[in-house]
Length: 303
Image 1 (cartoon, helix red, strand yellow):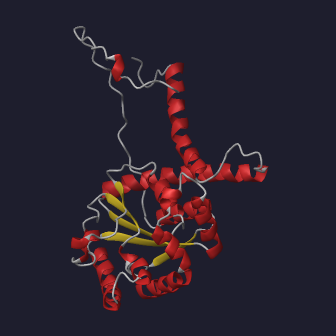
Image 2 (tube, rainbow, N blue to C red):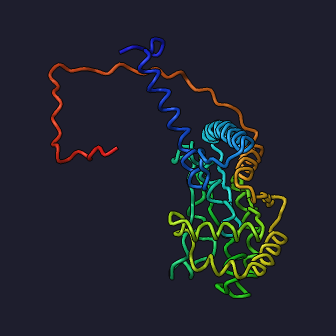
C-alpha cells in the first residue's frame, strides 16, 4: 500500500471526489432553499454572488472547525440561543454551523412542547438537562424564551408565570456565566412581507409543507402581538452578561454569513496543533477468506 508521500493518480481522484461530495452538501441545501444552479434566468451577477457565498461559507466553516478544536482543548462550555419568528431562518444557519462539526462536540437542542410532567417542574429544568459539559457546544433552536414569545402570545402561561420568568431569567443567565458557560443569544429579524413570502413558499412546496403547523399559521395572524412580545423580551432581558444580538435575516445567505462571522468574533480562539496522521498499512492474513454475501441482501443498484 503506498504511503501518504506516494499517492497514485487513482487515489488522488478519489480524494478529490470526496472533497467535491462534501462541497455538494451545501449545493443540495441550496436547492432545498429554492436555488437552482442551472436556472436560465440567473444573471451573471447572481452567479457571482452565489460563488462568493459558497466560498465565504466554506471559509467560515473552516474557522468553525478551528473554534471547535479550541473549545475542546480549552474545555470551554458554550450555549448559543437562536430565536426569531417562524420562517426567520434559524434552522438554516444552525445547519450551516453544524454541517462540518463533530456531533459529539456540537449538538442541537430543539425541545418539543412540554409534557404534563414537565409543566409541573421549575420552568428552566428541562433546559438545564441540555446544558454543555466542558468541551461542548449546544445550539438551542428556540429556548427558554418560548415563555416570553409563543407562550405569552398564545396564552399558554399566566401573567404571574410571565412576570416570574422576567424576574428569574437574568439571574439564571448570570448563574450560567458564573458556572463558566459562555451564553450567546441571537434574534433573527425579518419583515412582515418576507415572512408572508416564506410561508407561501412552504405552502406550495410539498417538501416544506411539514414545516408549517397550525401554530405557525396562527402566529402569522398575530404578527403585531408577537412584535410587542419580542420588544418586551429584548428590553427586559438584554443584560451585559448575556446581551441580545440582532441578525438582519431578510436575505438568508447574508444572515448565515453574518451570524457565523459574528459568532467566531466572540471567542479569542486559535488553531490547535495536531500531531501528524499517518495511515497504517492493513494487516493481511493469508488464512482469511471473506464470506460471500447473499444476493437477496444487497440493495438494488438503481442509480
